Image 1 (tube, helix red, strand yellow):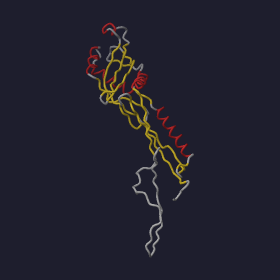
Image 2: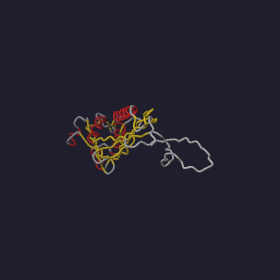
Image 3: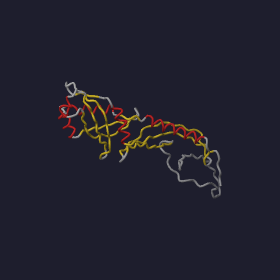
Image 4: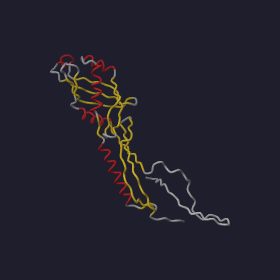
Length: 238
C-alpha cells in the first residue's frame, strides 16, 4: 500500500503562566473526526471469462432433468451458455429428450434449446454465484409450444432448475484471498516501516462483495476486512 491512515490520540497538560510565550512544539496536522469504524479493507477483483463461467454452470447443470405433464418424456440438461447482453446475462440452455425416438421423428432431432436473460447474484453464505430474475424470450415460447410442452408450464420449471442448480462455487477464490491477506499481515508484523511497527493484526472477515457484468468477463470483488494495532518503534523529532 502507498498510504497508511492512522487515528492518533494526543494527551496534553495545561500550564498557566503569567507572561506570553511562543509555543515550542511540532505543528499539528489538520484534525478530523475519527472514522466510524477502524481497521482496514482490501478489495480483490476476480475476473471470470464467460467461457469459464459457462463451463462451470454446465458442470453444475449436467444431468438435471424435468418432465411436463404425463407424457413420460424427460428433458436432460446438456449445456448452459452465458454471455453479456445489455446489462444482463444472455442464457442459452440445451436439453436432450429421452423419448425413444419420438422427438427425432417429429422434429428431426431429440434436443431443444431455450434462451432468456438473467441477473448474476452472489450468495455470501453459500459462497456461490447463481442466476436470478430469469426471463425466457418469445422464441423459446414457440419452441416449447411446438414441442408440445406448454410454455406456460415449462418455463417456471426450467427457471427453478436454473436458480437451484446453476451455480459457480467461489469458496476456493475466497479462501485464496483469505490466505494471501493473512500472509501479508504476518509479513507486516515482521517489519518496521517509518518508525512504526505492527504490534497486532488480524483478519476479521472475507466476503463476496459485488459482481459486475463486463464486456468479456464477469468481475467479482472479494473484500477482506481486518484490524491492525500500530506501535511507535522509533520517533525522531527534528
